[in-house]
Image (cartoon, rainbow, N blue to C red; front, side, top):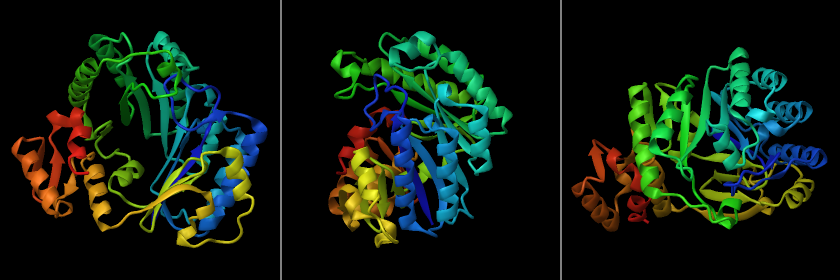
Length: 370
């Protein structure tokens, strides 16, 4: 069985920090895009799926009719009889009771809501178009529609944000009692409004904020299971954890990535071109449906690269780690021994794990194995 990721690259307004592939919502273009997604999905007819994640962009910006058409098509095309987790991303300003009811009826059992910041002034700084009250209303509606597995996205390390302010905001978010929290440091990406306006961040303060989050969330019963993710016990994201386990998944949509039959690929990140190519698709394609004409790039993952990826991804799972058998080359064994000696990594039976006090320098550690 495979995971399924569907990319909805539309937003009402792009946030100032965002470098993800997305464009402004246009009803005519989205109608064509949904048709293209369905055509693309049809290349995988009857494929058994065990998890689904619809992300973006802002998936909740789709209209009721567009959502229903897409969700009904997924049910008709794929074998969803054994889906254990179906996540849908929402932004507060485009959430409604009707949409949540529709999602529930089509089997969505997990929501990921983009809060990003607690204070309205911080939301405005980030370019978000909702305020804190809008988030509260959306969250309340989701609970009333019986969604019992909700993730909240939050950013830290904003310009001029102090550790004390971050701790206060984090404790306010804990009042929602969500099952899952994803915390990300603000980064300044090339080409974004923040980059063009020379917005700065402080790495040292961000690290202090990360350490504070680890402390606060542990004392409130959250399991720190992945570098940027915390969950109540048993509520870890199944779909995302399978990314880090290097399992295979289908990627549908413009700009979406996928991993099938030892091929890691990325689809065309041009919506008009994606729609045009999908309109020409006929029948079920080879390689479990992966269509080379939709790919912008692809790479064969041979045995050695696979082991390298297993290390890089597996070390993100703090409680599982990476299989010691992936460190089988002389070069990897040499680096591993150095990391065990300086205690940046630790061994627990057949698992190599990232030492928790070195989480914030994860990138520097995994680069040694590349």
